[in-house]
Amino acid sequence: MKKFLLFLAFLTLTFANYKFAPNEECKSCHPLIFEEFQSSMHANSTIFKDPIHKAVWDIHPAKKRESYDCAKCHTPAADNLKELITPKNGILPDKNSKTQNEAISCAYCHRIKEIKEGLKTNINIISKEPKKYFGTLKDHIKSPYHEIDTSNQNFLKGNVCMGCHSHKRNRFGLNVCSTNENREIENANCVSCHMPKVKGSVSTLRETKTHTFHGFAGAHAHHDKLSKYVDIEFLPKLRGFEIAVNSKVPHDLLLHPLRVAFLKVSVIRNGKKVFEKKEIFVRVIGAEGKPTPPWLAKEVVKDTMIKENEKRVLKYSFELQKDDKIVAILGYKLVKPPMVKKLKLENVEIANKPFILKKETFKY
Ligand code: HEC
Ligand code: HEC
Ligand code: HEC
Ligand code: HEC
Ligand code: HEC
Image 1: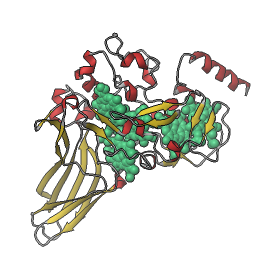
Image 2 (image 1 turned 180 degrees about the vertical axis):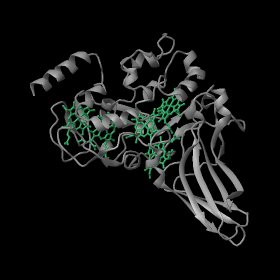
Image 3 (image 1 turned 135 degrees about the vertical axis):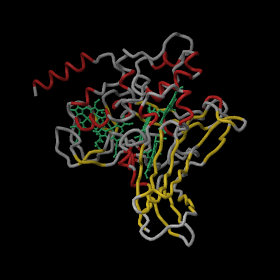
């Protein structure tokens, strides 16, 4: 215990100038959660770690204004958050800043007290108590390091995400990226799907069977944990066949305007591919009918993205024969191919590779 108290004293000294307790401070007691978190986009949301975010920032007009507006959501634990956002003061993201590198940190998220609704974006209201963390474990032991508050409705209803994920409008009022267009933030329960319960203890101080997954399953990381929320069905018809994509997701299948989803259907006969077709699902924003960068967009130019809880049926006139194998792959790319060059992301693997969300094989 003595050693442990010394360790805590050491932590307090080393990290004295942080507004939010650094992630490293959680590691000793919550090693599993800490490790999962490192693999998530919340730990990697900075321009230093996310090459796609950096590429957009590099061509964004806010960069010329020296105003890293993105900080509110991408580096909210920065000790110089205000200065980062303020235009024309020469203060830009700094690779050597420890607090910027904390990204969307443990303590930041666990101190979100309330969410204020706003027109352009929502705003997170942070509690003033640095060592009191909100959570949902009604049956918990005491932590020797921090207080625990399990009365916050935003946590209990799984709504704590909506300060950053609800919507983002540009100066023309266009919703560039939103999880739920109508801003119905009640009972959105993002947590049940993106933070499922997994094996392993919550902390090292008491053995529990499960804990909440902190790898934040999503388009970059751990998408295997989400594939069960989309089904692919095969329906033979008199002439040809149908493939249905049945989404059980309460938001568009993909949300960010850079994304593109696809469904590749092929027919294999006697070991040979005799048919192949690829459908594309996108949401394109722009002006006067043409795609533009998000800051110039005034309208949705095209929207074929699979919508919330939609069952999309695709018809194929190809005539099947007995014993044909039908392979259907639902996948996506993080960056639409035409945007890769504009963003100079040709050499960045994750911006170019296809991700497979679900693959099914059927026999006729
Ligand atoms: C209101 C909060 C908010 C603000 C402000 C914000 N973002 Fe984001 N950003 C998000 C969220 C949430 C996501 C994840 C969206 C998703 O995956 O669907 C995201 C994702 C992104 C992505 C996709 C990253 C990837 O790896 O594919 C890019 C690019 C991006 N943001 C750029 C920016 C830039 C540039 C700014 C500042 C000019 C900015 N964002 C400001 C919330 C915000
Ligand atoms: C000295 C050990 C220790 C450290 C360091 C520590 N915690 Fe904890 N924490 C605990 C214990 C013990 C529990 C209760 C676990 C239980 O009941 O099984 C807990 C529970 C929690 C909960 C759960 C609240 C709930 O009811 O859902 C949160 C959130 C939390 N810690 C966040 C953090 C964060 C963030 C950090 C780092 C800034 C951190 N902890 C550092 C020991 C620690
Ligand atoms: C402080 C703002 C903020 C909060 C709060 C927040 N997020 Fe995020 N989230 C982001 C940003 C920014 C990104 C995009 C990071 C990037 O790609 O660079 C993101 C990305 C994601 C992704 C995509 C991950 C991937 O692999 O592509 C998921 C899923 C996600 N968040 C879920 C959640 C959930 C669930 C909650 C609530 C428990 C939550 N977020 C709370 C800002 C936030
Ligand atoms: C029923 C399960 C389910 C619920 C509930 C859910 N999602 Fe998702 N979410 C998914 C699936 C499935 C995907 C697509 C999988 C992928 O991109 O790998 C996804 C993708 C995402 C992405 C990445 C999109 C992109 O374009 O990069 C973000 C961010 C996200 N969800 C946030 C949220 C938030 C915030 C909520 C709560 C309002 C929420 N989700 C509720 C299942 C769910
Ligand atoms: C984007 C927001 C977000 C971030 C970042 C985040 N958490 Fe959590 N955390 C949550 C939510 C939401 C829950 C409640 C989950 C539930 O209700 O099932 C939770 C639950 C917990 C719990 C309760 C135990 C459990 O497994 O249910 C602990 C402990 C915890 N978090 C610690 C941490 C630590 C340590 C970090 C950083 C390494 C961290 N959290 C980062 C949102 C976050």
